[in-house]
Image (cartoon, rainbow, N blue to C red; front, side, top):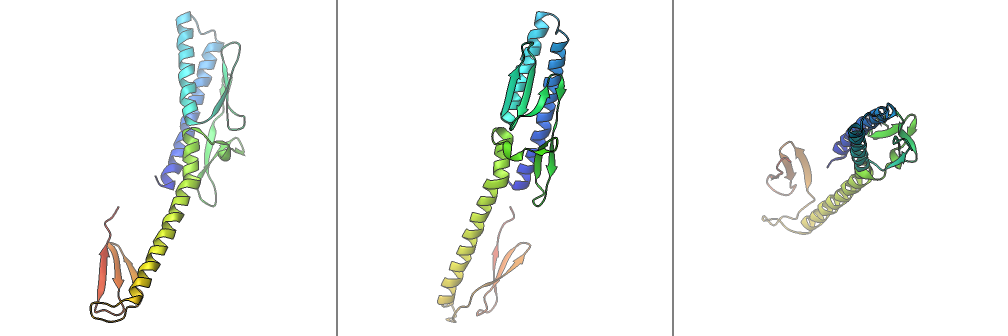
Length: 193
């Protein structure tokens, strides 16, 4: 998974949280209006339970159940997304310098408060894990190229000429190495990912 893909999923998860919060507010509204017969009440409580399960898969939520059966829901460090019949949406806003989306509740940036659930995993992958793995791969590639150049500089070619370090020229279809001491370029083709 790339950082940009994880970032797109963060934005999609925020939209999904907002949709579920709106459903919960609608259930709360129906419960406020009496809900009708027992079968209707049971259906409303089932919808409420299902929505809460879905929310808890996306983020760590705190739920307060009122005496009348309505629920109030917060995320992060107490940022309300459902209070009674009202839903309060989160926003995914691209921020500098990375351009990646940060999650806001009103004017408060709550990105660092979302540490669990699907959205917490995406944020951790995007902001920490993927960047760390990319740095490790860069370090490995740099070390490998230095080792190859060191070995190459100490050896002889098929034509018994002493070798000098490779110079690489990037091309669209691969890498062409120009061996300064030989009669022509040596190409290495890397298949497109």
